[in-house]
Length: 173
Image 1 (spheres, rainbow, N blue to C red):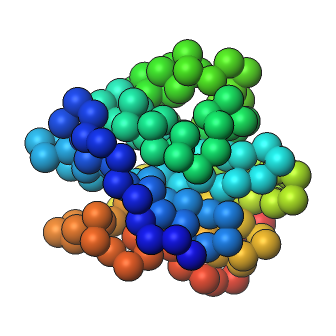
Image 2 (cartoon, rainbow, N blue to C red):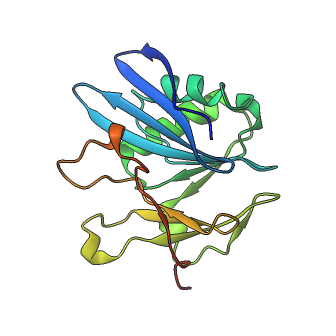
Image 3 (cartoon, rainbow, N blue to C red):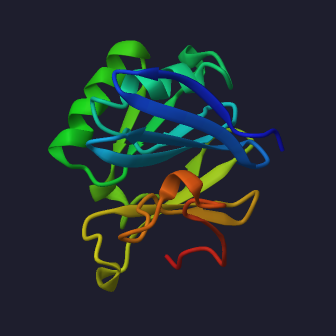
């Protein structure tokens, strides 16, 4: 896998992109005053970005994604927390990528697996005891890996070796 690549700091946000599994890229966006936001790109015939970020991180994330693939290829955007801040970021993403399909976290408990063309992913709600009520995790079947975006309190997600990636059995359901 290639080493992490940093893109120029945009609007005070440092963004890094790295391939963490075959065709799976982690985008780590760090703002010195607003914290760290992590997202994942699943590259497939219909690429999926898991985690819109916030309005402060969209420009840097779009620049980082463009180092991996043409931005107009992005097909799916999953809102992990479905908060006002993430919905605002989704609006910025849809302005940059015409035809981008947005999936909200609220559909996770009832959503069928998503066929991306060469990849298949499932969304699952986080367990209530995880402390991240209303969030979702993503399970990618080809690599048998699930992704959750929130780093534990006090951790430095910018330097975590896998930043929320875990090989595990698929979520039930």
